[in-house]
Image (cartoon, rainbow, N blue to C red; front, top):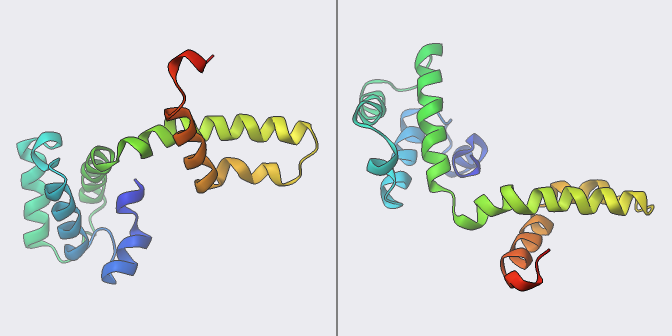
Length: 135
């Protein structure tokens, strides 16, 4: 859910994820990426639209839970193929390589599994490896 994290939204708009402007930003991004109608059913779209129109900031725990599930759906749909592969392939590979390097005595290898650039590098290398060379 990196695309819709509250830190990025506050930096961008000066607001929180469950404010009117934050929800409108999420809707705009989903519509630009053409996932608004593909991912959400009619009721979920109506709930999000009404919340944007009627509520300045979501305070209800029940509505917050409903909005969180809708935002999660949109965030997963908006992710690029590279980001999906980074979570599925790159991170486990970085963890495995980090454990091997730790066994060899590397102290800095503990941070490899959390290094975004290293995970992205491993993912791209894995994507570009021909199938006949993969084990």
